[in-house]
Length: 137
Image 1: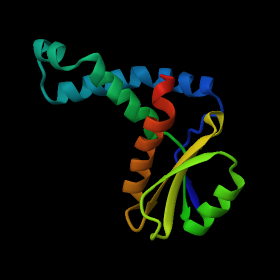
Image 2 (image 1 turned 45 degrees about the horizontal axis):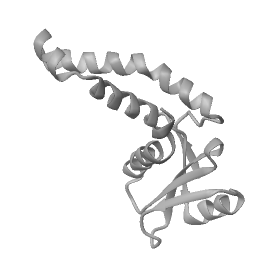
Image 3 (image 1 turned 30 degrees about the vertical axis):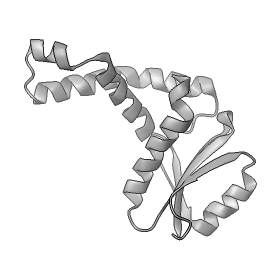
Image 4 (image 1 turned 180 degrees about the vertical axis):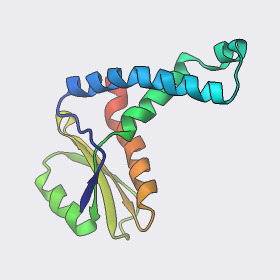
């Protein structure tokens, strides 16, 4: 088993604080991408909306979430010690699992996978954001 990512908020306030912190980075990323795409001022003003920046902010927040990657047996051992709701997506017939827990929300999300660890990690982070964090922001 190993861990990927560096952010696992212990409280709602910690999650909200980190979400606020990535806001300026999201704006910078969007501005740099628009510059690389050679948007002029009018096109920038038309196409770079608050929704675009918000989506970038969501992605940056999710990309930092700490997830655990392990075998099904390691996940089941952890799951038996975790006293709250766990939403698992994917097939029961594969041997590997990636998961993220949010103790303050008393919930966790998990995704099973066979080979593509990076894809599973990124899918899980999007699921975690949507199921756990989106409503906080």
